[in-house]
Amino acid sequence: MGGKTAPKYRVLMCSSEAVPYAKTGGLADAVSALSLALAKLGHEVRIVMPRYYGINRDKLVKLEGALGVPLGGGEEWCAVYTTDLPESGKKNPVRVYFIDHENFFGRDGIYGVPSEPDFLDNPRRFAFFCRSCFQVCRKLDWYPDVIHAHDWPAALVPVMLRYGERRGASGEFPETAGSFAGAASVLTIHNLGYQGIYSKDNFPSTNLGWDVFYQAGFDDWDMMNFLKAGINTADKLNTVSPNYARETLTPAHGFRRDGNLRWRGADYTGILNGIDTSVWNPRLDRFIPLPFSTGDMGGKAKAKEALRRRYGLPDADGPMLGMVCRLTEQKGVGALFGPGYGSAWSICKDMNLQFVFLGSGEGWAEHEIAGLASRLPNFKARVGYDEELSHLIEAGSDFFLMPSLYEPCGLNQMYSLAYGTLPIARNTGGLADTIQNYNQETGEGTGFMFDDLTPQAIYNTVGWAVWAWYNKPEHIEAMRRRGMEQDFSWSRSARKYAELYRSALQGR
Image (tube, rainbow, N blue to C red; front, side, top):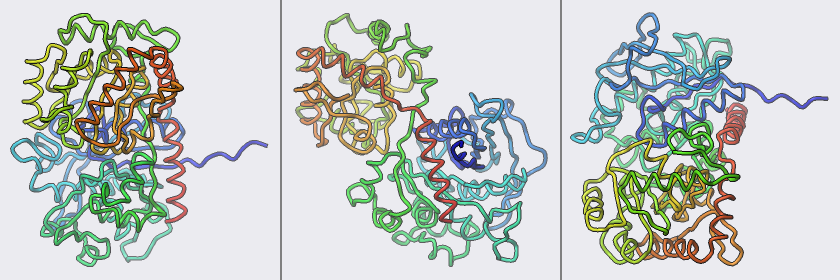
């Protein structure tokens, strides 16, 4: 007898970002990669997201007719465009629907711009987006089994589902086709540090009653909190690594939501993100000089040579330390690039290594990095972002530095391991789930970990890695191969999400 076939679901992804259309961080990568992985397992997946100014309408197909979206103060109208997600299979493509509203989304920036980091009308913009996700389904006459909302901009989706969309016009729960009555909601928290907290004067924009404000738990110190209401309301919750899920239940990492998450503990889990192994793969990477694998590591040496040339570094026998990140406090840049013994200055002055950096962010950090690059012959930096160069850094570095204050999942450590580059990272969040600390007695491990986010701890751990490079080369080689043999593909994570969907539908 054959095994029981796993159920296949209709899944609607509601997200403010998705690659290759709009991206500020790992959320965009995760939404698209998860959608593709679920489609490969046979699920029918569709994505709804805003059409921002930078997304070219000429490459999209416009659906006939305008879309009316109920919103506080009246109805808003918009257009809907569509296309298939790149790399979708022809048999079961992932369809993407773009909400086109010029006043809300026809501007530079997703959440803000340098002169206005958080747009004043963000509560209304994303309340409109969340309601439009339901309206698109009605327009298509396509109703999902699971509505999967991502982070605070989509956190009103489970609230709207529970307090209105599941009911018919009479307020009852219809059991007929062509409704949301049978739909379950899942909310994924990609980063608890961003919650969508605004004046409650904006609440009428949601078109929800004030009774829902209190029932769903929007209230937050006399403000309204999008994510808090989503946490209280979604059928199931998850975050992007098991260890980060545990950390967010504590006051130290809970950003004042640890109590809500403990209350929802039976419905809250951590599922580790994967990486796109069709893009981040040393055997296939089009951005590196020569492919390589555990059977032939020659291409890694070629990548290191090319990386030195790109940064204008001389040939040297020592290790290469790489870093690609946003310059924010979350990434530990204060401890690494700030004053004090043990910072990047001390690392480069005291150790026989070369250090390359790529990234941008807070002005003080960009200024400090530029100063270090001008004074240190073995430290070079590029301010900005360059996809090709980020691949070369992952492939050509011997070590990759991630001194994060907190890290919900982290992708760069998984990229690094896939390329035989050993992470030097703080023992937090998804970093702890994906890196095995080095044992210098046995040679076991896949990276070098530290607990305290201090300049001295970073300095000591980089020094430990450099010591192993010079004194235990056989350990370094074994760790490289061990890291490259790990499976960080999305297929494993997608199966866990399918199980979460099953649980959400059963528990609805």
